[in-house]
Amino acid sequence: MALEAAGASLDDVVRLGIYVKNLRHEDGAVIRKALRRLSVRDTLPTSTWLGVTSLALDELLAEVEANAVIEQTTRLSRSKRNPTQPWSRRRYAHRGRSRGGA
Image: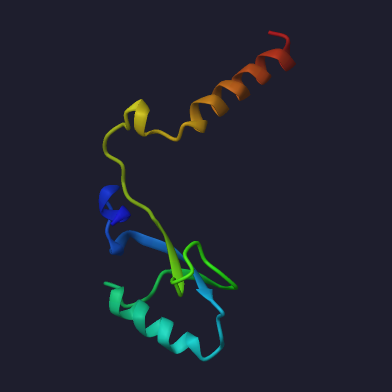
């Protein structure tokens, strides 16, 4: 599971994005029941449910995306960082120098 690979667990999940093929109002009870079985807390994390006409694979009925928050105790190696982050920082630093004239 992707959470475990990042050093997180279901307990660390703070938001869910749930995409359901051909979502109907009556599907809500079934989805909530499934989420409660997975949840390790008394309350479920914030979630957004979206009805869609299709998913990446035709046989899928639902897709769940989870955002978790964990405390990072060690610095990530350059290979594990967001590849756009260093570029963004350099870009802003460059803009600041050129605008200020210093």
